[in-house]
Image 1 (cartoon, rainbow, N blue to C red):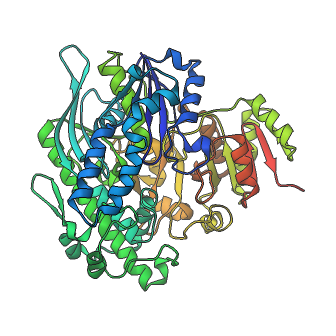
Image 2 (cartoon, helix red, strand yellow):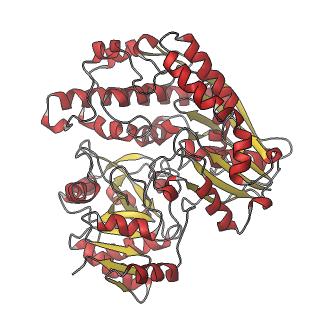
Image 3 (cartoon, rainbow, N blue to C red):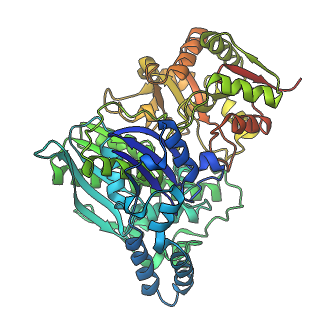
Length: 580
């Protein structure tokens, strides 16, 4: 079957195409619209997916939306009325949004994607997440955890995935936790308290946490209680999830101290308020990790399975993922690379393909490079039209040798190769690269290029065959996480001494292991850098400026290069230089 999955209308909309059980293409709408976390129906992303497969809308069997809008409307309406009169404002806004169109989403989707209404289907939010985690995983059967803010009503779910009598996977939901009780909503509320944008700034909280100590555990026990069965209960006198602008009440500030204004400077190394906010972040991170470990233990008990799959926005907490890989009672852990709502598009498509279509499960590893790519002649034509100073190298080896030498000399480069990544991590297709051995080069990237907070760490990309030289990887424990940059690990003594610019304040790193067979261009560059320096590790951060999506096209890359302090830009086999 030919299934187009879509997610939209909250944040981070996306489209994914599955043909006969095989993932052909997947992309977030923001990569085309250039609007960060674009929530609109992913019309451009869907058009790309179809073009990549050489299909038209007429060729599709179904378009499937990643959640059930009527059940979500029921939750929004019920929670607004339950908090009356405080919920009046949200009730009025919700009525305008839903009566203005979302209740008629089936017709909107049919028109937007040019299919008949009888080809439009709706999946369950957490089942979409569960399918995205299990079907691409390397496991024959597994426990599946889906943990996010909230879907329709569910915030957390334990599932079991295993072959049924006919060989087709049976994905069974065993337990759910319902709104408003949610570790994801707690994390987002504290994100807002710390002055960051909800559904965007949670990773900043994770980066801030290592600067603090968990001094507020007693206070957090008033906010959240975890029961013996790993269910969770929030004290709702501290929260107001019916308000999008401010999801916590004055009681939270009375407990934790005044909230941070988004405009206020924040540097935990300066002490004072910065240290207090770092302590809040660290306590939240510890509470989250403890809860996820308890939830994983309960999933193991309920399912009897020995492998674990995760999805949902909370599964992008790579610090917690590293702890789960080491301490949870499972032999293997797999996290979907686009674990948030974008990944729900792919999960919905896979769920329909396998359950309704009966398509066989594709056992090949899921490549993270599912987005738009550009041929050499397309790039050459673009550069000719743009009239920028550039050189085309004779072959890939010559390109990598020159780039390796320049990085080793302290230059910082933009790297644009092949199809762009699926998910929020830059994995060597759309990356900004630097030499991780050079002290302070991360500060240069922040100050000249990324224009982001000083406390945020940078990730290392390392050749898989020498990863254990530099990083504390526990054998196969991290094997399914580090290729997608989805786990934080420690550094070895040699790694800590050699790679100062990717070592966070607590001695950790969010490592990406690179297999040249799976990522030929990036692997070739790392091998060239190792030949040049003896170290097969580079600092790797996403190719974008603050507040913008990761680059999708050569035009995006050139615009970012022009407006930043990058020393050079690689577009496929061409090197773009600064104007003389």
